[in-house]
Image 1: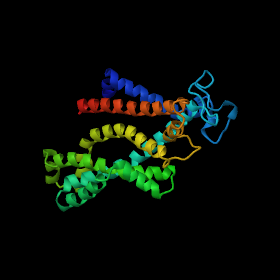
Image 2: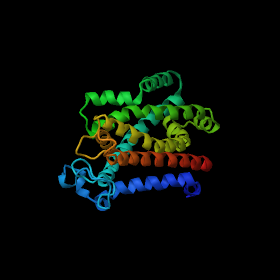
Image 3: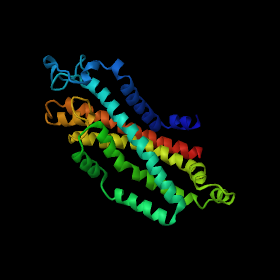
Image 4: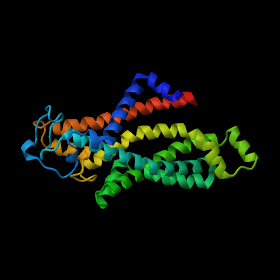
Length: 276
């Protein structure tokens, strides 16, 4: 509650919380609040295709007559599911690597961190594109590709913290009384890494959405007719500037999600630092 009060008192953090809330609620409640919930799939309505924004379709319709606002809401579902699953897999793996390397040191540190350096030496988007170029472009493979490029950043973050904490008095005291390595890693050092990990996870949600949208923009992510923000931008880009709504609104939806998670992450970092 104290951290929440700190976030609410900061106007920019509060704005981020509101934007994230809008994105999450739009995704969760899409089947009930979307103007045309059946437009999330293979539906055509050529009588209303490529219509500009109006009271009937607030963000217009696409080339086959599907409501863009409804598809954006369902597109948020794909983006959030992808982000949650990627971070749920990448964070524990990277955290475990960083904790072991930071605490044990020696040859264990050298081997584990050189593995991390190999992954970090490859540009993330290039690695994801290379994987998706080999694998079938599905949501599962997109998650695998993004996860493979994301865990090393958590390993590097946690390693830098654990390396500094292993010389602290409470760690030395735990070693003196005979505590096991796993006890020291998970019960003594890990709690001091959690504020940084939580903050990074919040910030990374926005970056995962950008990477996933980039893959879809290139035709390597979620495939039509499943609504995805990146593929909607790519489809509409061919018809600029005449049918501007096909690209502008999906692009703005990505901006809102990324901006919201970044503002919330900054506020969460400040709140957790004060709490610590």
